[in-house]
Image (cartoon, rainbow over all chains, first blue to last red; front, side, top):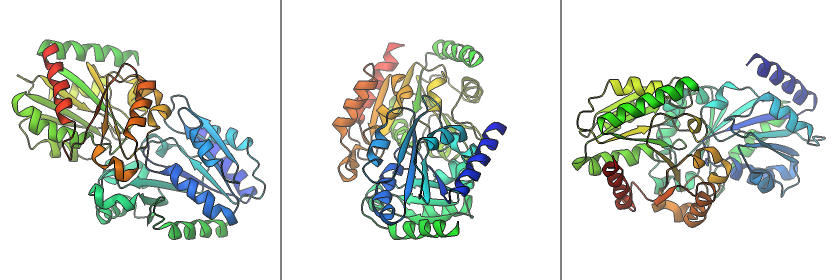
Amino acid sequence: MDGNDRQAARNRGRFRDLGLTALNLVSSPGAGKTALLERTLAEFGRDTPCAAVVGDLATDRDARRLGRWKAPVAQITTGSACHLDAFMVAHAVDRLDLAGARLLFIENVGNLVCPAAFDLGESVRVVLLSAAEGEDKPLKYPPIFKSADVVLLTKIDVAGVLGFDVEEAAENVRRMAPQARIVRLSARSGAGLDQWYYLLGAMVRRE
Amino acid sequence: MDGNDRQAARNRGRFRDLGLTALNLVSSPGAGKTALLERTLAEFGRDTPCAAVVGDLATDRDARRLGRWKAPVAQITTGSACHLDAFMVAHAVDRLDLAGARLLFIENVGNLVCPAAFDLGESVRVVLLSAAEGEDKPLKYPPIFKSADVVLLTKIDVAGVLGFDVEEAAENVRRMAPQARIVRLSARSGAGLDQWYYLLGAMVRRE
């Protein structure tokens, strides 16, 4: 862990020197990280240069999904590792042309547990919780929620049909993560994306 | 790992001596393990004595959800561990009155990665993939699917509204896990539960 923390600090310095804000996106498998990034690169990325690093155990499907826009994208495959670490991110970033980029999205392996303990050098940790997962997940997976700067409640367009109580979920997030900004959104319907883009814009300006 | 494997072998012998078939249920957070167990204990468990052990990082919510039926239930809280291990299961089982029980459901921590490497002493590994997670998850999380005896495609009642192609998902399961029985079901609508109970019945009879 010490080695990871030192590398994370190096990553953080490098991102700062490049004028980049790095976001670490964490969630269960299938909570919609890639779908949100696709739309974010297509829309927010039109005017604000972005880059992305995506982690999976296997396949380059996510990099191919995200490669249709102008943002540079690198895939990391971890084999059997349940999280990204700061070294993997450093190697992936070496393969990207980051000139001019202002935001770097790091899509972690789908996992609500392991990524909590691994600093990647990000400035902002974003935890996604989808309407399909149940309102109680913040209570059952405390470490990741306690480490979140932003919590996105995703797939809210299907909350009704899934019987998901968005307000109860938000209340559970507030209990475990009073520090976190909460945004309710759907990458499919577009609901709430204006707030997400507003947040991203503020992150760019802060640098 | 050697220590875990030895303990898993001891658990397996103990379950065999008790006439118990143990199932290890693994999935992402929110794929519906607890919902399926609730209904299974209420319906299948009415005639066939069952018991359950449930794992979470924190809270005893799942044990309380499952405690409304006659089956004995024990909660394991792992703190920050991303999977159950054979020792945790042995300690939890010590707290249960298993006299007469024929099936033991072990609900793992919600995680598609870490549980793959840890034998708990189960006879049957069951991996759940919900319609909310995307058809590609078997390709992206190979180890857990390759280790599955049964794959349950869950929440199929909302597959349409979520745009989830059940047949594509099943095809991806067959590619990664040709050994696995596949059952499509919904614990909410009840679709497919007859097949699940039929499978469970066959497991009981095998012992």
